[in-house]
Length: 405
Image 1: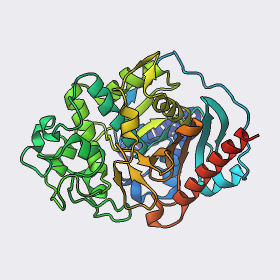
Image 2: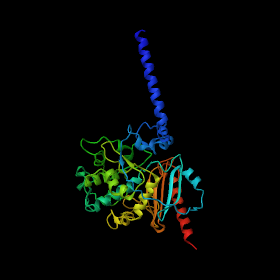
Image 3: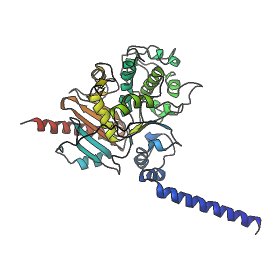
Image 4: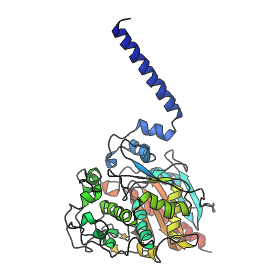
């Protein structure tokens, strides 16, 4: 046998072994992993993925270490049980609504009981779906936890007291409260359809040596208004809030969230949090959790942050955080501490592509949903956000009807 024949033989053996190995792997892979492999995004710009790529990735964001790393948020074995309540007659075709919204998971809790739970897009209660900006409301809650723990004095402290690399920058005289309410006065572009917007660029920013990537990007921005004078939605500032909490508490956010809320409240599944290039949680985004656990976080907030009779939040924190501190440029909505507020006392956590947790304290109502809208938000076309709010209102009316004789 000549040298060429030997090479061909070894190439054939290697290719056969690769094929056999892949066949075994494919046979053992779960359906979500198979879907991810077949639709694997080739870049980290989620705003510009195809619908099929998002369908696959939103349930598996923490299973793409080639693109982005993640950190587990462990839970405990002591699960907060969600009892079943009476089925809720909303008065509309819920299946049609979910199809239009491209909803993966929908749970309605009232008085702590499940009144409705449905899934779509081949998703189920056993899966985890990404949160996008729903994580903002969770991050802001950790500010309250850190104040309760004594790591942060109060929301009127200057941000640069906790993030020294911001000293001398546009954020040097911005308070924590102004970050929480997105009224820093710093210029920012949150256009999800613009590849050159700040929100599209900052996650790929190469950090200055020894500095967190978000801090490195944000410290070079410019001012457009006095602190406290103008509301502008800025995902980058929520990432700064996350850096602030971890710097003050001397813990990563995943561990802090797990120790203070996820484990003691009794979340059903481990969650995860995606990490930026410098190893810090992307705190304006990207918590992966089950739809039920997002609903449980809603219960935690609705219960004023109490766990086993003791609140992990300062007295009055939830009321202050969900109060309308500023009017936004979105008609009908105000803004609190990273919470969207409505004029009837309802409030919500919202994420692009249709993620959300809606609260109506008067009805003790929580609606948690995960979706994959065709666009990130209505600003890029469509009316999915408007229809979702109409659905929330329909649910409120259905519960109101139940209470009338």
